[in-house]
Length: 258
Ligand SMILES: NC(=O)c1ccc[n+]([C@@H]2O[C@H](COP(=O)([O-])OP(=O)(O)OC[C@H]3O[C@@H](n4cnc5c(N)ncnc54)[C@H](OP(=O)(O)O)[C@@H]3O)[C@@H](O)[C@H]2O)c1
Image (cartoon, rainbow, N blue to C red; front, top):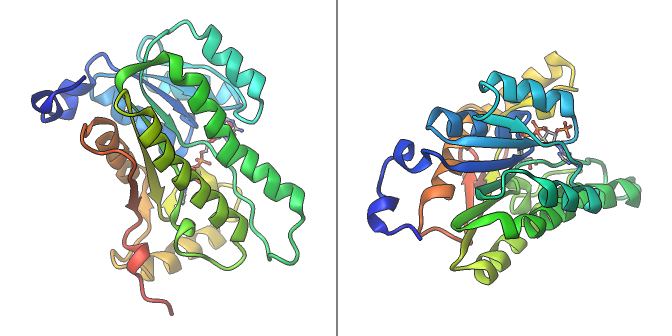
């Protein structure tokens, strides 16, 4: 297990040779984490559903051995089991799960099924993935889960998303207790950051959303994926941090409502 001296070493030293498995690593925040890990001398396994997208993402990071793809769908329990059982790389230093899906809509209008589907993807997916990865995670390693500001600062038409984010935060605290001292478990809670998550929106509408949300925040803008990746690297490597929800949200929690 890392002692205080190793914990104090710069990222580049600590990451040398480390293996980080990022589920959701083919895009957005997950890919930014992968870039930061590889830039600091570590290597990554990237997972998500789309094998072609993963191959392209791994290629951008220089390909094997620095970055490889391992496709699976987190909502398919057998696929998750088989991915970790057959994974040739038998040891993981840090597991990061940024993959998710989001459902919006008025509480009284939204059907139950899409909300259940979101819990499958954003709660049960990480739950099963973390459990199946356990035998491969090295002592002294870490798990980082993802929630989002809606867990504690609700938004209109986001009741399901707020609830699933709260569930992930509750799971984080429980796992930090249960899996320590072998592993540390933390949660990163981003505010709005520019990522592929918003690719399906018309560009003009998306830019207006970034602009208006940014203006409402103490920092005056929305975030960049690299800023969230910085926080994830901290959570991976600070040996005295576990069971926390780290907000990386431009001050969303203290913003003034219009
Ligand atoms: N961006 C924001 O403004 C924001 C705000 C608050 C919270 N967050 C949270 O931050 C995390 C990362 O967000 P992001 O912006 O990086 O999102 P993103 O760019 O949409 O990335 C999500 C990734 O998850 C993968 N994925 C989705 N469903 C999956 C499944 N069932 N199995 C495996 N992989 C799956 C997607 O790839 P495939 O489609 O190829 O599977 C995609 O690469 C998420 O938990 C999100 O809720 C983001």
